Length: 427
Ligand SMILES: *Cc1c(COP(=O)(O)O)cnc(C)c1O
Image: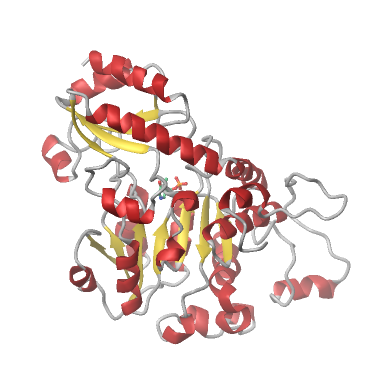
């Protein structure tokens, strides 16, 4: 597909390209396996000498078409879909890290990513240092070691809503000869394309806005093709030295800009197997078709809701980078001039019980553990995600007793605001 197409066109037309007489709509190839005529034909697939389908864990036409669409949306050279956002981040890191290595990660990331880096990869022998993403270049520099293999952050952190200074982080990563990996879940490529600001790898929980209807858990990893693995060959032997499990091929030699994603498919997907089902990829593709329309509506609704809450006497503060005066407003204007996302956090004045009364009084907004779908929803960190903490610990984590995470949907904004207003009256 031509690079000139606009994102909303790619959302509708990207990926699946039917030939004469083929289905107009992306088919669901609900088949684990694919047929060949000769032993030799299939043997060449196993050697990575030919590309083609033979087993869905490694590749499936439905999945590939959707991965291709997402690669085009991010402006990358290749992408892979995973069964969840967690799998995407795990693969993005372990594709270039092994026991004895080290990563640097923003401290303001999704809880699942935090645990992945703080606990799970540690058990595999990969160490992690967390850094304050707002710290100076010098302070973040100091976290790097000789064995550091990547820097990780989120465009808009879930749920902290911190906007990352992507250019600053890219400069730091590149100074140390490692790639910058950005989780772009909340911004989506509609509002921010991290590769344009120097990021090398992008990940997604497609579960959120990309699907957008709360139907299918999924993830994606996209490679910009810009990071020069060979220039730092000693740091990335997995990409630059022979893979004995594939007759000694060297990924960067054989696959050039597609080396990183090909290695991920050939090794991690082969051995760990976090593949999404073709059915879920089909649902994701339907979601992607309307992504630009929904993102625009989520953002404009969220701005109206944030303005309403900000002016309300019972609200202590509002975090929303699209609101002038927010700590991250300037960074958001730079990286996401058309809008940030539909998620807001705000704190009621008062106690945990006041917040619970507010939540229970909502009629339209539902209490669910989710964000970024078409329906407005809320979560109360002090009673839900951070339930085990006492008031002192909550304060340290930046969670006030009255803090509420609100994912603004695409309903009529007047109805959303009216629902919030009547629930605020109950407090
Ligand atoms: C939800 C989320 C994840 C995890 O994705 P799952 O699809 O739930 O596995 C990772 N990163 C961010 C920013 C998220 O919001």
